[in-house]
Image (cartoon, one colour):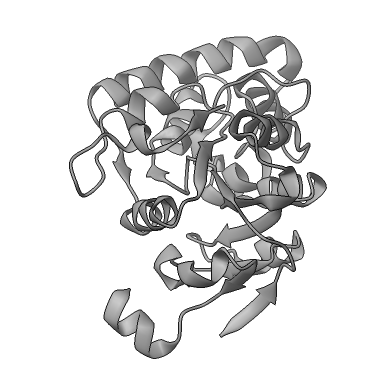
Length: 247
């Protein structure tokens, strides 16, 4: 079932990381670090997706404190961000993260059909995590990507397309021939603003938000995606028969 032709030849894919490739502890670290600033219980998954996901660390910290009505949010954001980073460093060292199998399947399959691959996350912890995660043949997950732009400082975070445009440039692929895989509405908007195709992965029941952000295709598992159609510029969901055999 082909839901959205992109009318372009696609040559490369750009993956966000947190929530797309990796079930990382970022959300938990942001929440736990709130103690002393605000009630951590107020930091729900919905809040995280709406205000923090996809943003650089300091911007995410300020957005959180402002969203929770913390006094002097701008002045206290740096302290909150540093506390969160100390927590995430400990979690990563303890191996408290794992790859989403469907995302690994998609990345490996795209690589097999000749796609170039890049990572583009606001997180500066991506390489540390992906070195510890493996693809089925035992190689580090990080090794199948041609470029890692994660944590690169840009003047504006998502929904500005700057980070994705840098990833396309690093792969030497025109932006319009790149597919972005994202789980956050801000990331989908960034992809579209950069002239790229956008594939939304709804792991949190937020299909409507991703569609509203203008994703070309939204799935609840990346195993649903018909990889064979992607090179032809068509984003498709596998037929029920294919999904039962290959999903």
